[in-house]
Amino acid sequence: MSFEQTWRWFGPNDPVPLKEAKQTGATGIVTALHQIPTGEVWPFDEIMNRKRMVEAEGLSWSVAESVSVHEDIKKRSGNFRLYIDNYRETLRNLGRCGIGVVCYNFMPVFDWLRTDLEVVFADGSITTKFERKALAAFDVRILDRRGAEEDYTDVELEDAVIYFESISEKERAKLLRTILLGLPGSLEAYTLEAFRDALSKYEGIGDKELRGHLHEFLRDVTPAAEEAGVLLAIHPDDPPFPLLGLPRVVSSKADLEEILDAVDSPSNGLTFCPGSLAANPDNDVVDMAETFAGRVNFVHLRNVRRDGRGGFLEDNHLDGNVDMYSVMKPLVVEMGRRRALGMKNQRMPLRPDHGHLMIPDMNRKGIYPGYSLFGRMRGLAELRGLELGIQRSMGLD
Ligand code: DNO
Image (tube, rainbow, N blue to C red; front, side):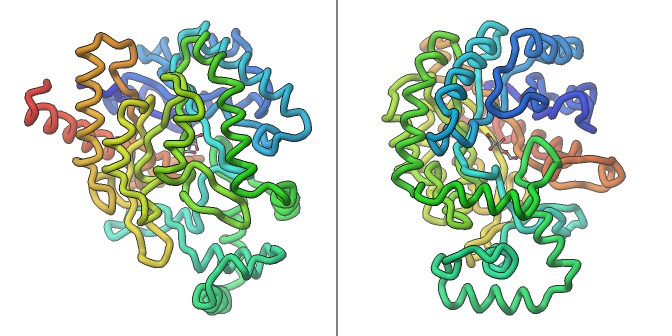
């Protein structure tokens, strides 16, 4: 296999232990020091402790995901200089410990966002979805954001109101809880007040400003990544469009081009996540895989089925709007190219990003949405088979 098959592990408190991850066939672990507050340096010793924990199970720590970017850096205000220095120091420490890939994102206020984390799928498994009418209902009726109406069409607003009136108090409370979860990394949620406060801090920061801040951040940290022998891998916005008045600048082909051009270095690369990107029908993820394969440092694979109204549901890995065969092929070809050139990063780490919650996992406590054992194992198995098929058919294995 060319891809290095990896598994996200949230650390010692993850209900899926390393021993189980190992039996999925993954050889690499993707993890983060979630106990360290965003913005602080990841100390060398703590990185080494985590690394030893992973290696004790015969696995290796392949990717640090995520080294989160402090909100002050995204806003380029407050203590952002200190946080950038700390970020560089973390990269150096990771490099010294031999962790060569760092995944991060530049989404303001919250990470990935869904409006329902408990959708019953056709086969009885549990998946997640994002519905525009639910988001608009939250925005206009619960959050009560100033100017929110302007961000939706009349039809969307009408749908949102009908939806909001049709759901019970309990369902409204659940929608609020779901959105405030601010995934991932912890199951701790924002309070509505803290969420409003975090949003309000972005007043005056539009698309242009956030874009500029991201490019400056890249110029600030890429040299340190290069020195440390670390490959940065920015994760796209999930979903890839502006939300709740916040700009999103890692959402389209043009955005990715700009990011890569901002600092032309192998250390400034991408986490290719077609499941995130494909939520916007304007994104041609096959074209993106073909265009950007040379700068892909990490791969997340999952699938979405769009609902035609700006929303989507997370489907099985090989079903949905992402043509997984056509997306994977250019990545496999790229790894062949890197191998021929004897490059160091010739195996892209790949993880099955999310999976449905299936029956054997339903009684397991504390499973992070999308991070079940069986659902992800199914995904990894399907992707591994797909890769073998692609390699064989191209004479690459
Ligand atoms: C969702 C994940 C994202 C990703 C971060 C990267 O499950 O793919 O949360 O880890 O956005 O920084």
